[in-house]
Image (cartoon, rainbow, N blue to C red; front, side):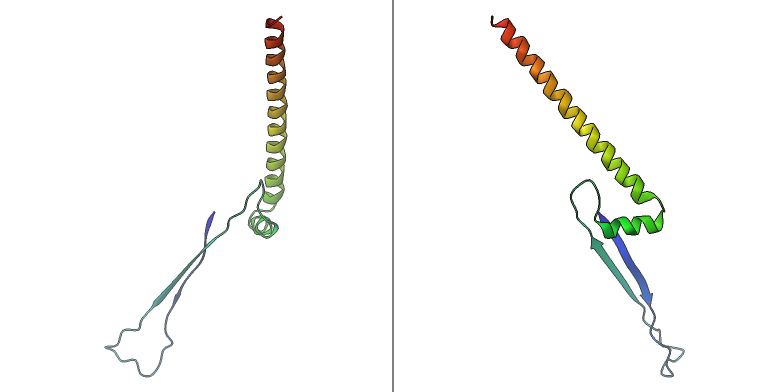
Length: 95
């Protein structure tokens, strides 16, 4: 996940040395931070940031992760049952 965290423009301080012909310089600062994590949910500090932007979002994200895990478990159970039934059919056909 890439996150643009800070872009700012800094103008030099006005001084008496500036004349009508001088052009003040402007410095543009750009910083990019990259967060990498694994697992169904982001780390707590990122969850807190999400929550500060959209109240209730962290809870919704956790509920989504829980539903996804339950779905995976159910799919695994169904695949195991299918494999068991397939093996039974193979064993019965050899008799």
